[in-house]
Length: 296
Image (cartoon, rainbow, N blue to C red; front, side, top):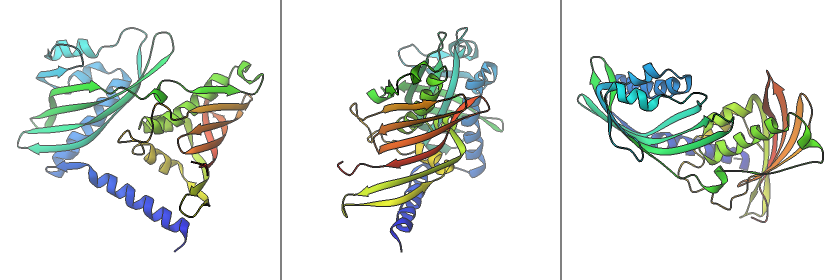
């Protein structure tokens, strides 16, 4: 068996282990309803469908936001979730760690993450942990108790170090190109696969060179598809132990035109070199050539 085949086998095993680590206990048909409602909650929030979001709760539902008193009933819950004018939820994802159904109740705990577009056009990201108690209402499951609190993001989530070839920062597309690369790195750092979806084209061609410290040699031509990258973003830093406040996130933009761009990223895993293209009005990463560093 070749080294490359062995590595692909290891990645497959790790992926399978990750899925089995999630604990879902209860009738499959009822579990599917709860999972659908979890997904719909995020959809309603990002679409601004606050009435539908409010109806995700029982009429006697209660929420326990960070730093506030208990909020009870549909009217108060709707008021809490209604956003100020000019503010929009860009991304919202819930990742359950365990769901257990017991008769007409179920409990569900896990992690959430997302991003908000502020009035001034800036973006803020956030993440946290939650516990939900579900109650069966007729044939549906609704949220009875919803408790959450934030997790302080590590320093790399707040900013990147950005440089550019002279004159490139003056290009009107420079900020959008840099933002696409920030989505790429923070998608992995913050376990936010949606940021990969936002910034990477489905035709991605990614090839890399990994330095094996045991053999003191590089393993060449390790390819990764768009689907594999999205999957990796959902679990690479799941336990929050892959990065620290000192982990690099250095972006250098080399060239920007109206349709194409090139850039470099120094991150936890090494160096990425990018080719980007403007696709349907949005900058997308098309090609990535990467290598880990032999001195690490």
